[in-house]
Image (cartoon, rainbow, N blue to C red; front, side, top):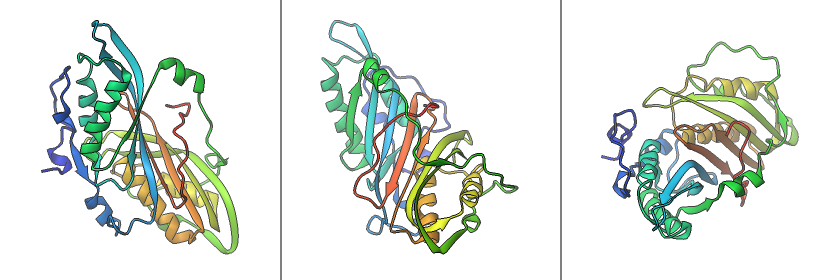
Length: 275
């Protein structure tokens, strides 16, 4: 019963303002992995899904409300993703719930989210002042958005557009802010920026841009879009290392930022200007 059609996504939902962990809805990753020819035992990457909540609030024992920013790190190989609307509903259920302090709330969030994801989820609760001091960042490498490309098909990802020169090995970082896909349930647009970092056959930047734009009408979750990009590039480039990550624009107070890499570390969770 954990398929997306049984989730609250795309349905009218009651607003519950007191702690309700049962609202969280897991969706197994295995189904989408199978579509990509993967299984839990054959994942060619490691990584994390960073979720940032900008509408986190609860009550102190005095009844005084607190607002903060929540950061959640979900392992990329966890058995389940957490359906985004259920995540929002769960976070809203904290609004009229009493916690002694942010540390107590973090322990509750870690317990509930880890149980839903099927692997330990790291939680950090940050004050608005902390987040403001950290500020925004720019993506690394070269932006390819101003390249001159002709595009006519937006219905599905087209890996055949990717062009490279196997005789020339390069190490480079490219990024684009033109990633867009659609929610597979509601059809609502998901906007994002994506980074590709690798060492391998020289990728033609204009071909990467055309390929990324071909996701424009594609219906899939954030995590699966990034995994598809990773796999298509890995097959085409045969790289020594490859990192693909996307920073998505928030919806309903949450943004989702999947990182997939062959390296041992993933980049830090830092906000872009659209986030």
